[in-house]
Length: 280
Image 1 (cartoon, rainbow, N blue to C red):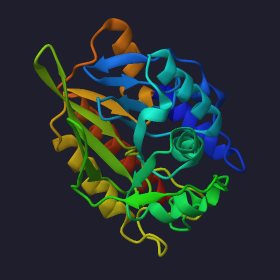
Image 2: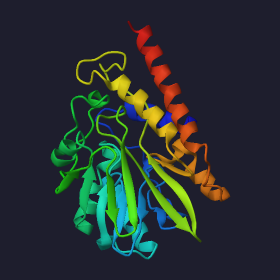
Image 3: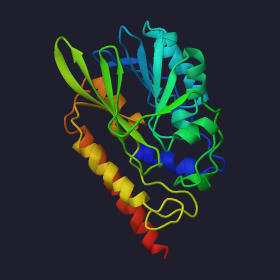
């Protein structure tokens, strides 16, 4: 967590948001469990869920990282052209900036939340985004995009992946859950969105007009992630739950991972609110 905090601090200090080079660094793809694979970079998660009916990809990272994601999918022996759906976590450049390219390569339909849909379709950051003041870059618009409802399950062959709205870091955040099987043994898989209460200039979680329920949203999202059935957790930034270290040790499964991740988000929110109180 110290490393992600340092990276976030660097990002917020840079005008016209630039992604830390370390986040786009090389990372070999690897199996998470069963039909689920990590295909992202060193610091930007992306997960491929495979099936005989086609594949589902979660997140597209940055445009530069998208090239690596496509290469990782091929490296594992799968075809990018077999991706039917691309799902998103939240509508920031470092998680969906590469979606347009991956959609171009695959022809997949992009599935996102109601609030994130206009951001993907226009490539423009929402003015109510807590980090809007950080001058985040525009993204290549995406089409077609379909909004999924909170609690809706996306079905593809034997795969069923459920959307859990988890706003607060942005208005349109989604976490995703599904079951993966290996040798007949099921695992509860979670792709958890960011739970960090990070702000740009002028935004306050303790009170603002552009996103007045941001604090309530992120509090509910933290509680929701903590309550998820959770055997193997992937977070939007893998370092947020030490995914690479866990993979290196062969210990990806951790039934307490979602609760621990949520507690980190709760601690961050408390710090943000305390800092805002000092500025009054």
